Image 1 (spheres, rainbow, N blue to C red):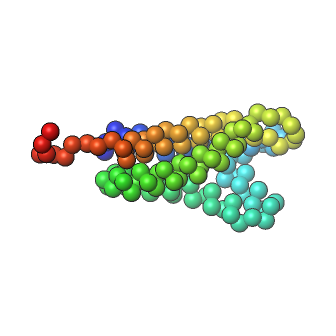
Image 2: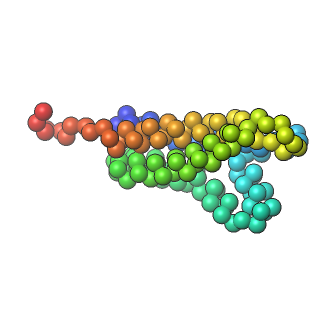
Image 3: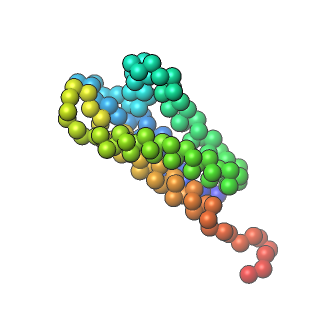
Length: 139
């Protein structure tokens, strides 16, 4: 695996780790992103929130594609996944630490996920933009 691909894969691992950290504070109870999305989906009656649960699967698929050497496909999938997850994490991060009520957005989960998405994006862009010489090719 090339360096840029390894950076993208590392970023995706951080993304998944961040989704399991504390995202929401409800009184003394902390909830990860999946618990928060489940509550939001029930309260708002919006089944679209359930899509968040496939984030780890999407990240795993991207890493497997990098390992298999399908760099362009992996990088494209990583760009799409990291952008979508990064937008959600950025919105949550902008609300983090605001003690405006009994329920608040916690800092660790969204910030970690946002950082991972940024690293994954950089790695994916590097995978797409940096050309490596072919073995046996002329210089």
